[in-house]
Image 1 (cartoon, one colour):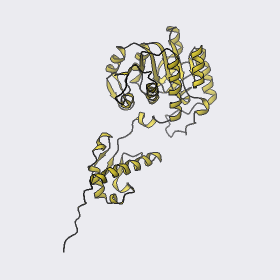
Image 2: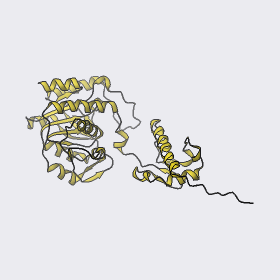
Image 3: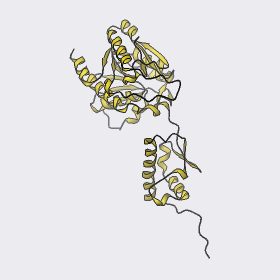
Image 4: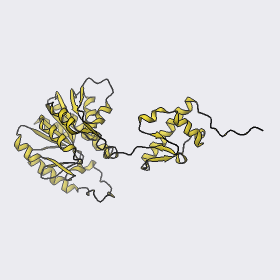
Length: 318
């Protein structure tokens, strides 16, 4: 009597390709349901449509055939799939997604109707990256100097623009380079325009960022910007203070009278209130009255606050 083999049959190539599709659909649904918060998914927890992969040994063999996982940071071990921990950048990049695209669209109108800049600085941050993509569509990026890895990742290889990555020490939490290498890279350039993502601004004109390593980098960007600085932030960042204050706009505009500073944000009605954070360190979201008070104070400092495309056209006509 022949003994039943305990070994699983190695799936063919088409099976592995189907598994890849099913598995990423599974991971996508987990993320949509906000349940993809652990560092590891056990094989027993993976629920796929294809019956061929219900057997754990067959599933493991098929997964081992899919080399693409090594490029996405997902690795395979004896117990399941190891998923890399998300950084601060990755956890927050799709917060206020619609608002960020609206901001990028408004910004593109400003840049297009002001004089087209020859060279532009782009800071770290997801709104800066989305803004880069929007400007790229309109052919408004001629020379770009950036430390933002997300911008580099968005390149398709057929761009007519020149994109210069500053180098430096890569900071995983912000998905960008920092340190002396980044300072040197930004220090070598002089750009008419800079696009700077921020995480807070108050009525006194103090501008805030989350990570200490960004302070000197952002100051270098502002120092080497000749004409216009575009600060990009959704309305929930207005009248909010984050960890580090890196510049005061009132003082900046007094010191550099010819410099133009814009705060590009979204319409108040489009900013959805955030749920209360479980973290005690997170400050509560500002009220609309507080936001309006801050915007009024910023305008009195000669900061151009732009909340929509119509505002952008009006400002450019002046």
